[in-house]
Length: 335
Image (cartoon, rainbow, N blue to C red; front, side, top):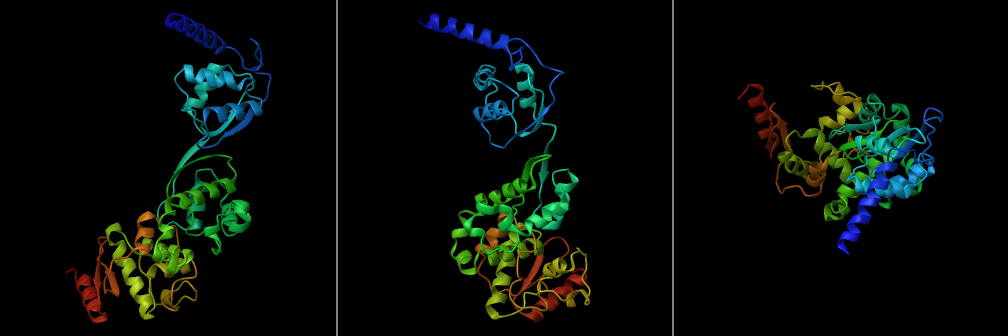
């Protein structure tokens, strides 16, 4: 019986390998060089079965089951890559699978860095040819329209998607719809923050305020181990009714990143200027990463109300304004 099964398997393998050199649109005939290329988008996470169906519906192949069977026998099932492909109907199976395993030349890997604003993200994506920056910004400033029925309930209340496009490494296809790019990044935020959104402090602050605070922590901090302390300073200031006096919020209000803010900068008229307006800014000032989000949900317990940068990425934290001024003086003297 085992010999019989082995013989049948060998026959099937032989037939499939023979068919691999033939066109999938006809029995041994090829339309290569005669048919226009077909643009096909293979989404991230698609299975071989789903990819086979997509290709069949696009007219690239005629037999979905043959592609599925061949990938299994060739040992490449599950390795077909997402991307935007331009394929010729009637392409021999062996060549088609080779292309899909190698990946689309139009698939771009792009990293969104913690703290980047919508404008900066738009520029990064435009630079690698994924989106039109102006269209991206327009859509991210109107989440209800952009996400439509896909807009998650927890996101209601957010006026824009600033802060809700999770910083991570993504793989996008050139030519991919801008709305789909945005949805992917919002979905990633949803995945990463599912448990954090249940934290008592998050429920107390509200989602937008939590992400806003996390975005300020992200911009003010350089060392992630200090994030919980920085968050504690802002919590303490809010509880005492003190202005946050965050330079990062002024930078956002100015629309430019300056190494040193002037007294004139601190007077800029904007609801994001926390030197002139109390409480949190009206919304996030960038995309916080996971560690900043965790710190904003669960700050350490401390009495600190001030911190000043030492110049090496770390900060000196102080309880009183007098101690804060002394710390600044020491730093300025290089002590």
